[in-house]
Length: 611
Image 1: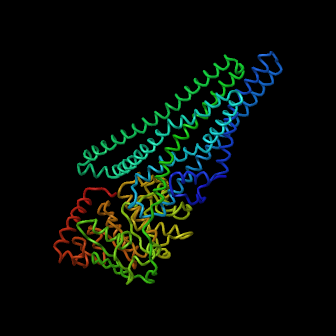
Image 2: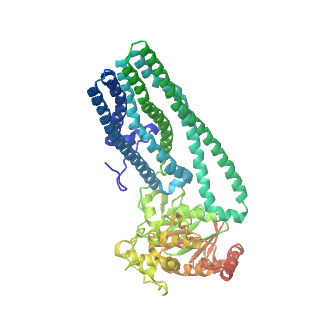
Image 3: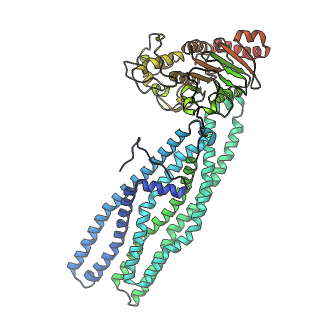
């Protein structure tokens, strides 16, 4: 039985942490059963060694029967060899159990995150997802140790109790009551560990999210002079997390100390009682040796039982966090009306923005959040009264909206992989799009436009190469491809950290253009570019989107001058509409806003290299 990267992990039980752990066991019950059987036989045979030793002493060594002594000794050697093999198989099987639980949980979490889509960020922080993926998944898989050594410990404990019963009922009673007594002592500590562990995990996820935010915005914080303030806050939070970690460690150390110390006291008590009975003649010398051996053999089951309780306490906390994540649901899609068959007007009543199909429209505002809010409403990422044609967007199935309207997020994630895969096309044949990467010395000509795919669909098959080349050209990203050692086949780090900000922006734009959506809504697609590159992008973007609906939230005169219609927004509402030059002549507020950008662009053109 195995789990592969494309296998369906199954529908998890989301009713609680314990039920989720039980589901993981059920999904691989043959392997878990094999682990339990192997562990049970392995631990029982550990207890068989003292039994064989007692027989060797009583029937061979004490009466001087060398044949019996050799026979019992050979039996001990054979049992030891078999037990060594069983130990290896047990460990191998339980490793597979843990790996299956690990990968299955990862697939369940990633699959659910994919289903949540854009709703994910609004419901859970990045730190929570990272903590689940890095910490909780490992904790859950480790807790499944209970199905192997844990079950084996219970079986071995019962077997040793039975063997002790044949020697002395009094000693058997002490042994059989010993572990329940350990449970009574350790039970409250296990409950406290769950509470401390849950609080620690919660704070860890918050701090992890803050680390990600700091890493992404460190340059901005430096520019604003806020790095020290944020560093102090982070230092305080990490100090609190450290203190909480000490509390978790304190409980864990008590559990581990008692797990080591109590069995030793237990061993001493049983050995003392056995020695007294041997001195009184109630048991033989061989039986005394076996009693000592039984108690020593109990060390493994008792240790595993304590470890099982410890790991299960931590595992159920992690499983509850996974279940809570799996309980998140995207906003219900109640759309029942089909989207307009033909390109139609998009209208946002909250702002008064009306988007005419087939035109390049720009939104200009002093507050970028107002423009991005409009794009989110028109793309149906936030609830609104926006309409498409005469149909409210909320009444159209979300799949139809996503297939035809694309909101290009300026901070959209870029996954690790080859550059072509990052843009949206798997590695291509070197005779196709790869040619774009080999023209290091020759200028890249503007490719002839390829036949457009269906709205909202990426090109496939033989059309991938020309569409990819066209998208890269429209985003003025050919220089990025030429500068990389292997062109489109160059491996790019996650979030394209090995590229500059301007290069990342053009890669995101190329990815959006590759999909060739019927409606493209983009926020500040050229904000990180110098004036020369921005002008090139503006010209090529207009040409690439000719006849299709494009909406840009921007204040750059280079982009605005290419727009068919410009909406000037004040306090989130349309204050004036016209072309860029008309608004420059008639709207002082608009002129002041874009003139500032024009001055910045001129400064960039004179003093900064292209990014």
